[in-house]
Length: 66
Image 1 (cartoon, rainbow, N blue to C red):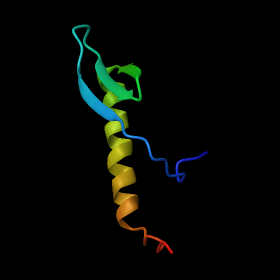
Image 2 (image 1 turned 90 degrees about the horizontal axis):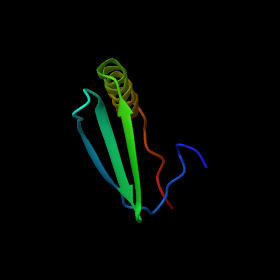
Image 3 (image 1 turned 30 degrees about the vertical axis):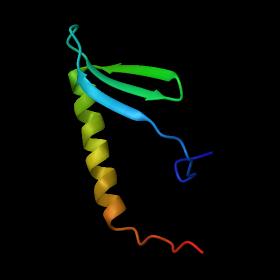
């Protein structure tokens, strides 16, 4: 399984600050909860990676599904 493998799973993503000064990504799916805490600096790096991935995705020509 890799980043290009499609899955039919629904998940909820919440993003926000914690009372400890961290940034939390909270993922909930199928009874599973995953809290992931990052320093503000790490969160900014993740944001930059997301923006770069979005820019790269805009350049991709999707393969047609048969």
